Length: 240
Ligand code: SF4
Ligand code: SF4
Image 1 (cartoon, protein in one colour):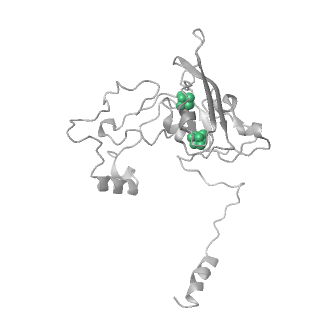
Image 2 (cartoon, protein in one colour):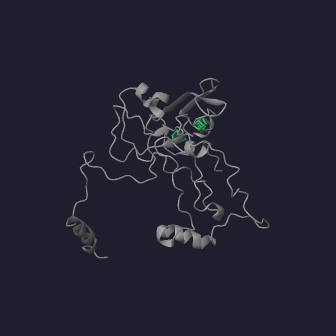
Image 3 (cartoon, rainbow, N blue to C red):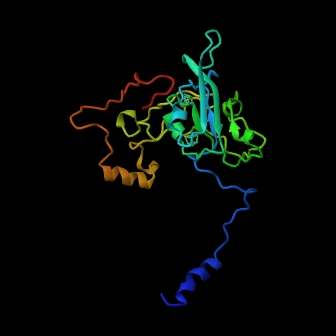
């Protein structure tokens, strides 16, 4: 490329239409799997999904989750299990939105909304407690005054569950492996590799071809250790 050839790229860009949005007045739609601020989900009957197991706190690389479990009151249980999350706090001055907590949770209690536009003027506001994190009676996130929610940010806050869901097993094609949820009910199963080709993104098709179908059956085994009739899966999740 000659001396002036280098200016060609610059000149081409100068006359292209501007694509800058008037952020934050205008916002682009966020991807379905966007990692925003968390919510603590509830079952369709209103009970909390969190059982206070502290797995999310244990896996968090930023050490920003603090959980204390307590026994459920026999006459007025908070969750379906023996225990529930008595204290639950996330420090958003430390969270890096890696979603390892979502992956670790055995009951799909913690997932993320698509909201990331929130700021704080004091440390106390940055530490979210159950009052802010547990979804409301309509199953949607409780919106705080300092959060900039836009249309769609609170839709399907748990539309994706975990990357380790066994959708790679053909035995699970078309099966929903998560429990009913307040506000959303039982969501449809994700389209797996057996879905119609026009529903699978091109890069996923490439992976299937490269792996020879991505069958997770071990050599010598007649089938998957996943139970196709779902008997090994509880109403509380257990899709691992
Ligand atoms: S998203 Fe990552 S950093 Fe944030 S609370 Fe969860 S595990 Fe911790
Ligand atoms: S959010 Fe999930 S992983 Fe964390 S304490 Fe509750 S049930 Fe356990």
